[in-house]
Length: 177
Image (cartoon, rainbow, N blue to C red; front, side, top):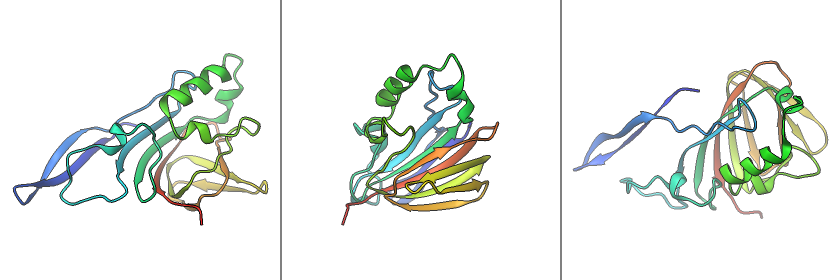
């Protein structure tokens, strides 16, 4: 997805555009069409004015600390991409570990796609159709404009359509009670 990332901040006590550039992308080589781009992040206690640090870019993990946030834009290719004879699950796994540190480790090897994170997630479908599968096997179909709020639930995303689906994810780091 081609989009811009505009950062509004303060300079000399006035609001200014601190950055206006193409939004980051993270296109995978091993999973054609998969683009899980981390757009922005905040530390556990963000301050105003902004200190000029792109927390998501500077962090060693794509996952937020408790109280911190991450903004992702993710394009999911159809699940059929992973069924192609040329698909290499080992290469995909290695690329996940390299490009999505902190998140990749949460995926369950015995149940493809299933994962649980210590986050509260706001998940918004921008384009396409996608399904989310939960622990009990229940599946919820989502389409453009639908919003899912998750409280650290175990889930997997499934794109059984023939078209890509693009979503925005806002993750807020949380602790388990």
